[in-house]
Amino acid sequence: MKPTARRVGGVEVVPGTHQVVRLPVTTRLDGSLLTIACHVVRGAADGPTLAIVGTLHGSQWSSIEAIRRVVLGLEPNKVKGTVLAVPVANPIAFERNSRMTPDDSDLPDLNRVFPGGTTWITEQMAAVITAEVLEGADALINYHTGVWGSCLATVDHLGGITEPSLAASTARLAVAYGYPSIRSLGSFASNTYPGPSAIGAWSATARGIPSIAPNVGGSGFAPEVEEDWNASNVRGLRNLMAHLGMTDGQVELPPRILSSRGRGHRIVPRGAGMLEPLVGVDRLLGPVRRDELLARIVNPHTFEVTEELRSPSEGFLFGVARWHPVWPGDWAYFVADSADPRTRWLESAGTVDATAERLLALDEGRA
Ligand SMILES: [Zn+2]
Image (cartoon, rainbow, N blue to C red; front, side, top):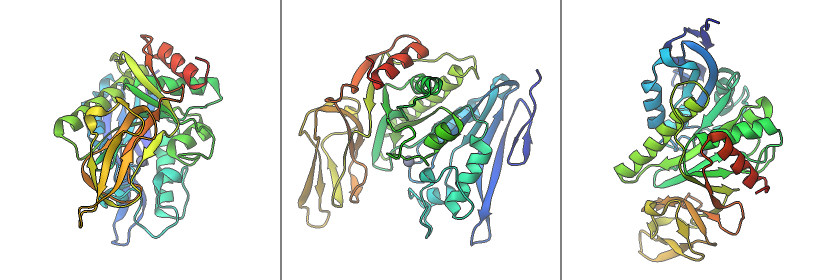
């Protein structure tokens, strides 16, 4: 069957082309039209639709570079299916380098309002993304990387999905990304973090769309460290397209994957100050001892040490911070607790499907 044009935001994107469509949202007070840019790569042959959404939180912008490299590196004539890529889902928050839309509304967090609504700016942005990007998607990737000064190192998926085929397709996406750390949030169809109105949770529960959130990287670190994260995310997106049959590429799997479950321990400052790290990026995915000193919080005015951040358990680090000023509650360190039997290194089974089955068995307590 000959593929047809893909209609996005009222624009017909013909097979074998890449077009940037500006999705209109609403009018801003400066008189300009608020739009969200969506890259539509319409392959020359039919196939699945992959939705890629970055910068839902405006301060978590480091996935833009990997999305750019992958989208610009695609040859639309060789792609089967369609890529819908939104590098900056919340342009207003991004402009201010803030997590949320800086407006005076009670719904400013774009990743808590899906499928959106007709009132607040953030709801309107979600409604546009839902209608133009999520409806008709076969898989969703949404990025949440570290804000400046912090980083994360897990590919998150919802976990606890009761529908077997959705559970399997979701676990396969997580494995196919090819990153050596996967966290199950264990929160499918529940009100726990990140809640039912997060983009991934809504897409899964309301539309049956498998999704993952590769939380790989951050900003403010050495260029070679950040380049390594970019390379991981580029490989991940290319892996996923190969896994979904959209390209002829091969999926590259790591020999083993650190599996964990739930939010883990968030070791964050209770008071503001300068975070002085004792543990840095070289320790990511490595072991940590119970009570190990991870960082000190120093008063930048008096130079007093006001707080010590210590690991509450033995486990593995999947988020660390660099020297930078922090506010109370800012992301600093994340530890997967080794006391949880689901925190463990899982050997790759060679293929995506077999490894995903191992991952699910562990997550569901069958292993
Ligand atoms: Zn986020």
